[in-house]
Every structure is written in C-alpha cells, then in structure tokens.
Length: 170
Image (cartoon, rainbow, N blue to C red):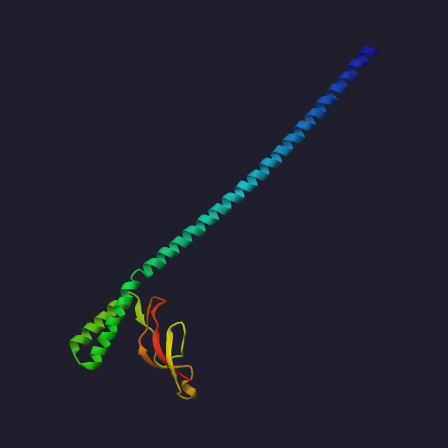
C-alpha cells in the first residue's frame, strides 16, 4: 500500500505541478492578450486620428482651392480700377453717351465677376473698408460719418481690393 500511496502522492504532485504550470501559462496568455488589446486600442486610436487629420487636410485644401478660385483674378481687377477712375473723370468732363455706355458695360462686367464699389454715401466710417485721408468739422450729426469720397474703393466678393479714400466728419 505504501507503493500505491507513493504513486498517488506522485500523481497528485504531478497534477499540482501541471496545474501550477498551466496556471502560469494561462497568466502569461492573459498578459499577452491584455498587451494585444492595448496595442489594438492604440492602433484604432492612431487610425481614427489619421482619418481625422486627413479629413481636416481635405477640408482645408478644398477651402484654399475655393478661395483661390474666387480671388484668382484679383490682380487683374486691381489693375483695372484706374480705368474706372479714368472713365468717371471722362464722364464728368464730357457728356458723351458712347463713353457712358462703355463705362456701364465695364461696370456690368466687373459686377458679373464679383467686383463692386464700397458704399461711401452717408455711411459710418469703417476701417475695414475706408481709409481716412482727413477729417473735417461737420457738426454732431456727421461725426464719425463719411462726408466725401476722394477715391472709390472696391471689393472682390468680400475681400477689399482697394480701400475707399474718404473724408470723415469730426
């Protein structure tokens, strides 16, 4: 019986050793699984961030393209503004219907392309659109208002391409 008892004890010890080894292996695998889950979460986070960065990049470049298309002719239109000034001086000097017709067609062309004059008639002075060349004592009701415009200002869409040069009441 002692031999049988020894065999049983050895069997129990062997099972305990295997059980401990199995538990060790399980603990190692659980640790490995936890590490892989952390790595998966990190990769998912990185993927999400990359997708967001790409989306922001796409939006930004689309906005830049749109802005570029809207203001592509800015330089050309800016160089045309002295022609408008010359037309207005010619119309003031001579009363010719032909010059007026050409002037109106020219303004219509500019308006069609988003170029329009900045309002200066009896409006409040606005540093975003007007450039004050001087001030003039004009009474309390004209204080801070545009009294006279010496050179028209123009916008291309919402962007000022030439500030209106004005006299401001004080």
